[in-house]
Image (tube, rainbow, N blue to C red):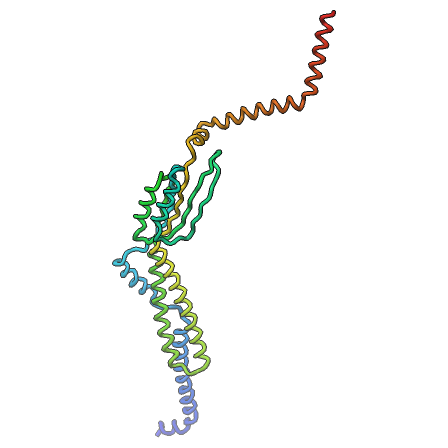
Length: 278
């Protein structure tokens, strides 16, 4: 009886409480849905560490990504230069040229030619081509640089995989979305994700190209003549030039002061004649 009276006396108050609880429940449910959508659309890619571990485990079997570059300068005699240049062109006929030029420089009185090439070669043929180029002439300079890009490659693949997973989640949200505002937000997020995927794919392709093709910078240099080399090493030419320059300075001095010299000689001869008479 007491319970019945309590409910009858407070039924309006209890009804208000039920209505408030109902709205609170519906509001929390909507917040949960919005938060879920917001997380899916706005959050950063998830599972990156896991994807990195998966990619690295794959590479334990696939091997490293090594980028090779080299510079090689060789010298040949003047009489062999033209023939050796043809040999080089035949050796690298299947390679991809980035740059090719020939120029001359002065070495004493000699005109020294240099044939310079920058080329891309298949990495599988790199060692063979380097060895063949070394046989062309006397090596005056050689350097080789190896860069390990495995870590970069793994990271790019992991990012692509992760963003693709996020793209799938956001696409599922787009299928369920009905509100125009949500649809626009999700489509913008999809565009941003796709842009990042394309960017990492480009970087991945760049690494693949650098690994697949190695870069070689090669120079064929014409040797100066023995005479010019001896003059350069011994310094005889410089000494002869200094002697000639000294003689030339004396002649210039005499020529520019010839009048004073003649005047001095006349005075000297006059003095001698006067001394004899005395």
